[in-house]
View 1 (cartoon, one colour):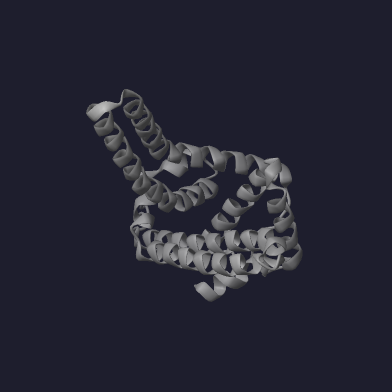
View 2: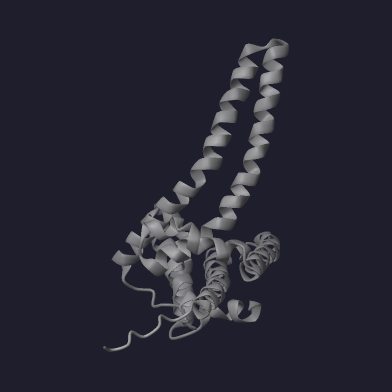
Length: 231
């Protein structure tokens, strides 16, 4: 899967042009609209892979990509609410404890800091859940599909998805280290937007392939309905 993922971003017609356009969009991400365009394209690519497409989809239909990107952002925000609420609540406790002073205030601040640390596992869980949720959203073209537990659960608990997550993490760490080294020579700064777009597509390929393997297994295991006999 890794070899296929690494070559996926440049496959198909105009693969290099696609990578260049994607890198330019990432470069201008501070304008926000390019962020939605890239997000919309990445979720479409992952959904296409989950349906068995070997090449990335065309980088066009800008209006549709923008809408998909906004919807993907809404889903990401919804998933992030739990860790955000935990972190924000504990931050209030820390500030309140510091303002109160004394032993009670110190104890309150300590409890708040501990709670903020507990928010980290929630962030990791959301990071793990989100790719599968976004793929199902794009596959079904429905916001509700991003929260369909019955569909997402077998994917999230599958060996394929866990392996994909580990590989994406490993590639991100290695690639990030190389990019940091190159940044010392300014080369990394120039290629960074294109690298992150390439990494996004490669990652989506791995998650999409894992989703497809689980989905195909479930479909093949579902017995076909018996034909109705004519009277």
